[in-house]
Amino acid sequence: MMPHQMTNNADVLIIGGGLAGLTAGIHLAKAHLRVILLEKHAYPQHKVCGEYISNEVLPYLSYLGIVIDELNPTRIHRFLLSTVSGKTLESELPLGGFGISRYVFDHFLASHAHRAGVDIRQTDVTDVLFEKDVFTIVTSDNSVYTSKLVIGAYGKRSQLDKRLRRKFFSQASPWLGVKAHYQADFPADLVALHNFDGGYCGLSRVENGVVNACYLTNYRSFRTFKNIDAFQQHVLSKNPFLDEFFTKATAVFDKPLTISQISFARKKPVDNHILMCGDTAGLIHPLCGNGMAMAIHSAKLVSELIIKFFAGEIATRLLLETQYTLDWSTEFKHRLLTGRIAQSLLSSPGITSILFKTLPLIPTVLPLLIRQTHGKPVVMD
Ligand SMILES: Cc1cc2nc3c(=O)[nH]c(=O)nc-3n(C[C@H](O)[C@H](O)[C@H](O)COP(=O)(O)OP(=O)(O)OC[C@H]3O[C@@H](n4cnc5c(N)ncnc54)[C@H](O)[C@@H]3O)c2cc1C
Image (cartoon, rainbow, N blue to C red; front, top):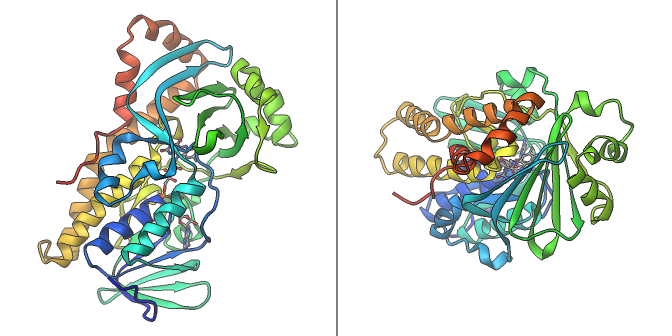
């Protein structure tokens, strides 16, 4: 299919070119739909993310012609959890995963999308209107786009949510995310999650032997410190594993990347008639290490239904929206709930201490808990 550079009209407009938006774009373009994807940043770019991806997405990526091995990812199949005092629990990861930086992965998917015929434009979407069964999108450079359907794949929080009056936007969230890359000695097959007062820090390797250190912390814990260095030194380093890591590691970035207002509030998978995908539909607690797989999986769900809609197999917009809401909830609601429970359990030192005493006695329980936050391999119907 040839890219449609000259027109601002498409079958499907996608807002946001992260994992959800790009994957949906590739899937739809392969089905010969005209897709324009609007992404505000240029590729490649770093993102705050732990960069551990569950293997559940591999069959689907392979169906789309995306071969992850070309990126030389690390293969990860062990999980280690530690408390602030340094007690540990270890488990095999039932499905396993791979480590790849978002800098490389998103760029790779964008190249695939471009080759598949997705018309990618670098622009910031400022408004979405729905009238007489047609969407009109306005961007910061005053361009106007129209389409029959819109996929919202613009991540966990955007000014667009305010514009669309989405409920969660007005509720303040205390969560901050910090991420940086390091040169360090760290096992290639391991993803580690180390607890500290007010949050947890993930460590795992991405391509080229670089180690990703990414943590989520409560603002309550962070606010008394002047800067990230002081916070890491006084809070994270109370955990002996993090102390050793940050003492020995050499930073690759000039300074870590940060984001605030990370909200885990419930959202609607269809809002203002927009089919929401990835974090725009709902964000799982990062400790589950499953947000990226869910973003890619939700792109599959929405793309399959959109293809049926354009083929006339789904007769109306209402049926499309109802079916997507149902499919999304069936696939993800349980995982999001388990993520919320896991997060609140790990935030309580008393419960964490009981868990660390009892879980080693029944070795099958931890893999079972991990399975609850992960899906099965995503295969085509
Ligand atoms: C601290 C932390 C650690 C995490 N660690 C992991 C992990 O190890 N493993 C895992 O699987 N998941 C992890 N996640 C979750 C994971 O990062 C997300 O689930 C994933 O990035 C979702 O992809 P997405 O495509 O929905 O959104 P994004 O990747 O955020 O993409 C959204 C895109 O939309 C663009 N955009 C936004 N607004 C506009 C606009 N108005 N106009 C145009 N473009 C716009 C943005 O520039 C962005 O490129 C973590 C999350 C956090 C916060």
